[in-house]
Length: 318
Image 1 (cartoon, rainbow, N blue to C red):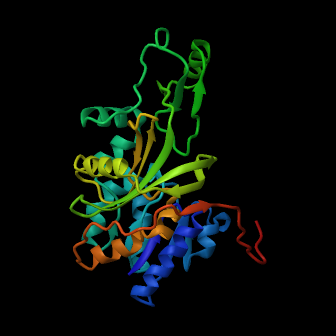
Image 2 (cartoon, helix red, strand yellow; image 1 turned 90 degrees about the horizontal axis):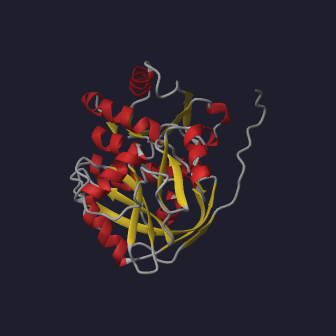
């Protein structure tokens, strides 16, 4: 069961988790990683094998991916970035016929959650509180929170204090979405949906500090209100499969405002792994035909304090 992690980038921990779990199942299994610039990808240097990949939006990406998987006996693909999810979801059926499983939700879900505006519509339609999108910047109450409709890693996200600031942002990029500003504690929830779209494990983690759009300090929290909300949310995620992340705010009055869903493994997932959620074990068990059951035996109040580390490549030349 060789596994491929796409757009590997800096995801060293993810590669190491995969290596540890796969080799426990089968010592012959290997973890591959691809990236547009693998020589500058720390994760590619840690992986058992790595290769250069074309940009995911190019016409030949699907053909490249299929040929790589067939030539290296890859049976499982795990995507890691938002821009590739819909594309890989569209290839899922073709690859399955070749014996290759892409761990990704259905294309319709990936497309819905790629945009902030359609994510807002999804939450509204399914009865979940979410920050309201403001369509009239002249009459709404400030401050607001602005973000690009198709952004990730908090790129372009900013607090907006006035009409003039909002209009300036709108003029700089028409893709800006303006929402009401919610004050509360911010959480990310890592959860895994089985092939039957049923939640298998749900781990909320409170975000204590964020750097460059990715959590750097956080702690796991067995919050029943959040966990029950994710269970209800999962009933609306028909077509969802694999690791998912949900971002939300919890106000002082214990109201939950859902912000966004990423149908992929999150950047702060290492904390959930160490708390007890091994997505690679779940992926492999499903691949072997085992039926997964809900599991809440994970470590509460486990804190993660991330720091910079190095991967040294001797004799390398650019």
